[in-house]
Image 1 (tube, rainbow, N blue to C red):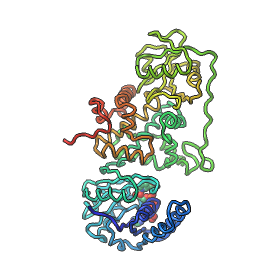
Image 2: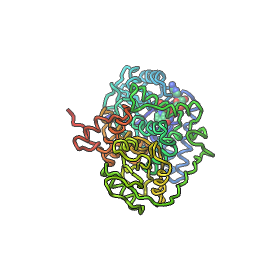
Image 3: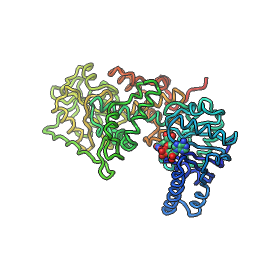
Image 4: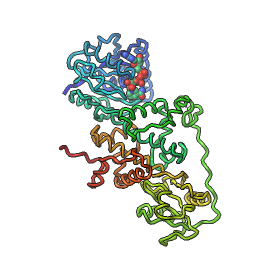
Length: 508
Ligand SMILES: NC(=O)c1ccc[n+]([C@@H]2O[C@H](COP(=O)([O-])OP(=O)(O)OC[C@H]3O[C@@H](n4cnc5c(N)ncnc54)[C@H](O)[C@@H]3O)[C@@H](O)[C@H]2O)c1
């Protein structure tokens, strides 16, 4: 197999510099080139500073830092890259610029030199189409900041020689990163799989279910995510996230699963780009997010008994567990008393739908989310219909907060917040697997390392119960009529056959 010893990096901005850093630290000779001479010298100085800082922190020896710096050479002209066996391109994200560079490079390097692009959003096949030897071209997609983000997508274009990708997979190990292999499809793996969290969070807010702060809190405190979608968009930059949402949606010919939202378009138009602008979804003071005050928990004059609908067996069992632990009397008749709080535990349905088909008293019916289990360590979500009276809403809120567990109160929503967002994430990952863009295990690896989710989306689906995820999607689809929620065939078939979502398809 081809192995890479001398590599060229063209474009030494944020990404190129990070790639040079890990390559030189791994012992490779790196030639750097940029159209701006000043950028080249700045990059070398920055790298020297970075390595000195690592020495200061005891993470690198003096000798290793010096050796790394000695491996970085400035190439003033492209022709100085002639002896490279790999050139990594990290220039401006424009197809014409990348095609022109690759064409020029082909005239400079030897026949066995691989030419790879760090593009996030352009087609590798389209970049390669400008080359006389498109088989030597592949995608090599790092994430920002390169030394800390340990995953790299290796992308095969339509005409790429698989041996180039194989060699990149091996090189990635040398660099101390994890490689995942993807087909040349919009968003590759990570930027495709990442469409679930943001777009569904936006739909929840757009539907008036609740505000963005509550969505973020639920995703963190109920689902274990490090950040909710709005905190994440503020960090990435709403001006970066919104065009990615639009681009993936357009590239998949308006697939409803990736539908963007006017909410982010408006923030971009208003210059509310997020953390870097001091304001996005949140305001930032000295770079610190300004926290909104939490709504007060209502007080309770008397503790009503609770009747829990037995219609969803598993949800019923979990709700009983919650209310028992709170010391509430649970009324067990087949119908609720005149004076009990009525609790339903829907999966993918809203309270209104459940009230209608179970013929319940809407004024005192609330929903609680039992998806993924109930434990005092997890925030609770309480959902009301347009007919639930404020008195019964407040009573339910006060009861659920009796043991000081956080409670989020939301308006009616098919699938609360957590069910909707998690099911959407799992469904999109299933579609990526179904389209054979990557293997199931690479999808999970890429998402865990590239997006920092608490688990890979396919394992998450298995843990939550693939059958339950399918039920949620089917119900969301039926309540809303929105094709966005149609379940992936990958999910359908694995539920029908009782298989794990990580089970690859047998080769036909
Ligand atoms: N920034 C990210 O978060 C990120 C993450 C993954 C991938 N990428 C991709 O990496 C690439 C670079 O992004 P970046 O954020 O490092 O950009 P950047 O603007 O920080 O750096 C680009 C560098 O390329 C140089 N350059 C531009 N056109 C050139 C040309 N024709 N020839 C030689 N040098 C040229 C510029 O002078 C600049 O130094 C893009 O394709 C981008 O989509 C970026």
